[in-house]
Amino acid sequence: MPEPIIRIDNIVKRYGPLTVLDGLSMEVMPGEKLALIGPSGSGKTTILRILMTLETISDGFIQVDGEQLYHVKKNGQLVPADERHLHKMREKIGMVFQHFNLFPHKCVLDNVTLAPILTKGMPRAAAEKRAMELLDMVGLADKAKSMPAQLSGGQKQRVAIARALALSPKIMLFDEVTSALDPELVEEVLNVMRKLAAETDMTMLLVTHEMGFAHDFADRVLFFDRGKIVEEGKPEDIFRHPKQERTQTFLRKIIAAGHRV
Ligand SMILES: Nc1ncnc2c1ncn2[C@@H]1O[C@H](COP(=O)(O)OP(=O)(O)OP(=O)(O)O)[C@@H](O)[C@H]1O
Image (cartoon, rainbow, N blue to C red; front, side):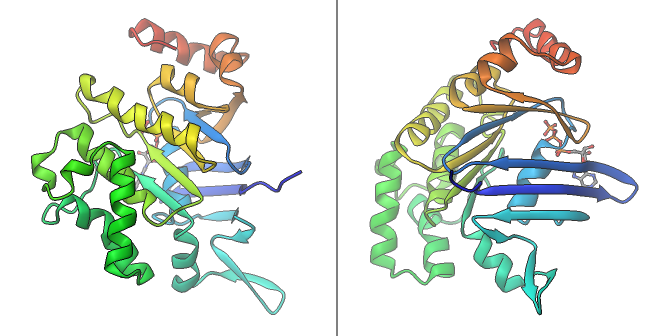
């Protein structure tokens, strides 16, 4: 039996007096495709940001790929990790955000090569070769010399996916990556994610309000409410036969709003 690639153990996240995650535990197996769904403010994005070390935790432990994320062992004791450790751990994880966050003054190719060259010291020629493969994979090889402002939202998001893949992460995090897109551009981004899910063995965690996509994409769906996992299971179970009342109410509202689940 393989070990989980992510093990979240009783974590707490507070912002001042507000407790956003309250003793949350979950495990993710290598290669698993996970969808995190639930009402606004339930803590889904916070989990991804914590895994990406963009936020710290107030309490608890997180293990990624066999190592503690926020702690290191010193004299047999777990102590807070230093920046070097966090940096090393961060390279295992890629993240794609709702608002692309491309570097506006760099062309598409430079957006994708920047991190491998700067943080991994990869030679430019090798970084560009890899970047062109990734741009080809997301269907944008012909846009390598374009500037972000010349691209549609869907194209920008596909560049952001290629950029996140450039450091060859084991884990990819997708935070509502289609929420800022015009409806007609959503599908081109979802198609890239379908392809990634089908053709790679990467572990993928997806926060989404696209229930139809979550249904098709995920091996397992976690329903969050108020900083806790209320229900989890296979997509067909969660979406067709939700057991918990809060899940049922949430899905009813989504269907009433005209979304496919
Ligand atoms: N930097 C911050 N400072 C204070 N509160 C924050 C901060 N970031 C998030 N929060 C609060 O934490 C809670 C959880 O936010 P989070 O973004 O994780 O929810 P979510 O489930 O992803 O919601 P959505 O679906 O709307 O993105 C919210 O109440 C939010 O207002």
